[in-house]
Amino acid sequence: MADLSISTTTGSQNCVEGVRVFEEYSLHLLPHNPAWLTTAPAWVTSLSLPHHTLLANIQKWSQELSWKTHLSEEDRRGVAPPLRVGVNQMYGRHLVAARDMRAGEVVLVEPPLLLALRAKSPPYCSRCYRRAEHFTCPGCGFFLCGVECMTESHQEECAVFRRLGLADPPQDERQKEEELMCERVAAMPSEQRAQAQALLQQARKTALQQRRLDVLRQYMVQPAVRTLLTMNQSDLKRKLILSLQGNSDTGSQRYRINQKRIVDVVINQLQAATDPTLVHQVCSVWDTNGFEVPLGWGTRVHGLYPLASLLTHDCRANTQQWFTADGHLVLRAVDHIPEGSVLTTCYTDPQWATLLRQDHLRVSKQFTCTCTRCLDPTEMGTFMGSPLCQGCGGPLVSSAPLDPKSDWICHSRCPHTATAKEAAGVGAQVGGSLRGLSPTDAAALNAMASHLKSTLYPTHHVLLQLHVSTLGTIVNKDLSEMPVEEIRTLAAISSLVTGVIKQVEAPLTRLTVRMAREEVRLQLQLARRGHGDERLASKNKLKGLSRQVADCELVLGWDDRMPPFSAVLRDYQALMEEQ
Ligand SMILES: [Zn+2]
Ligand SMILES: [Zn+2]
Ligand SMILES: [Zn+2]
Ligand SMILES: [Zn+2]
Image (cartoon, rainbow, N blue to C red):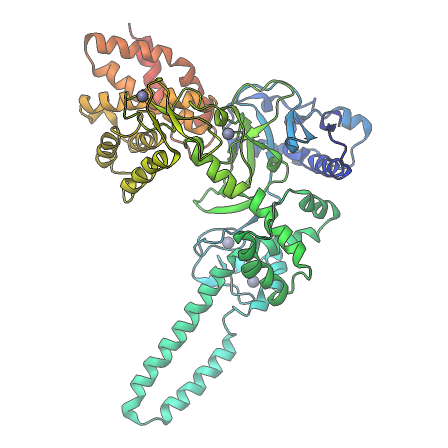
């Protein structure tokens, strides 16, 4: 497999060994990635296949081939993945584009190595993650859909979790207890019987509720237990999990929480491991590499995807991941990616300003991002972090964007400045006024945006997020009934938002196309309903949006959880054909 070769710039043997493990693992991913073969079936080159069709095709294709993981030299020559694993001082292990990639191309399909419940989930089935609150496993007490989910894979962890003693007592035991209680109650003076009966019933109910609550509390332990069990399944899985990066700072609060809530439970109560260092390592592997995975039925779980977790962070990423209903990760190029580029994803919210993103990355991922946007005080000319200069009404920008203590200076070169504290004060004040605001109340969102315009630059991230929420309220709305004045206001908001997003996001990200969709819909309304110049201007604007229309058609077609676009496209085409 020539293209998964190592590009080493540091001599660390450990790193090289780690890369070998990932290469071997990549071979196991071949059945999910027909596009990696030089003899790939023709359908894999279609960028517009919806993910469920893509996955169904892949499944059918891989079933028709008999897969072997030990490929011959000749087989290996026929494998050319678009990505390879690299290692250097700056990024550690990372993924590199092995050839030029088109925007929209599938870079990688990766099934989860592991899925697990999230710590604060409501009662979900431990096996299939559907909402399940009426049936609990008679062995471990964890929620399941029913006996159909007491499968072999559940039995393995059931044997571990039953040591917590959270299952309901067996039927015959309950019956015996019931009979005993009845006898005791019957022996009581008649005037006390009713009260005793009620108390007993209450006690039974409380014990049951307590067991259910205890099960929910133990959701936090499930990822670690599943990982330890998986590590026993094969040498490769063990090596792979131990090769994943985990930042475990023994002085951190996270470490203390992991010790108390996970490590102690796994070792003392569950007896699933004996080495606390190993359990801490497993916890930090999840903390550092865990993906939040939205499944098809609205459940969110945690997932481990070893190859995708080698993606490097960038605030303007060149790839984005989608998840299919059953948790497969589909990684797409969201921009043109030249050969040799580092493949990147965004671990934080690109809609936030630099200070906020930096803070989030420091706390959640323990590093400082030094991407082009983070180093640019204007944030690529968007001024998304800028308070309004009280001297001239221009934007204030940080004099050193990576230093939260640096002064803010006026970008319009008036002598006005603000200390870091004053700039942060504006943020805190804004944060305070946003509390309790409903994201579905368009009128309140607008009123808040007008109120904040006296302290924030018009493209400040808080204002933009209010605008994004406002635009979110019209996604499923029929605009033909909306007063034209309102359409005009929304169209102005949407032009502002898409203008900024184009600077900070790649063209095919979910946010870019979602916002482009609303811009197209609003301009379509203005072109249909406006008069004279306005009508013409909207039509010209729509002509200029043809690229975004094509992007919307592509990206919104991948996933049925995205807003539909075909009706908008029909309207667009019909209007463009009119004279
Ligand atoms: Zn189930
Ligand atoms: Zn069980
Ligand atoms: Zn950055
Ligand atoms: Zn100024």
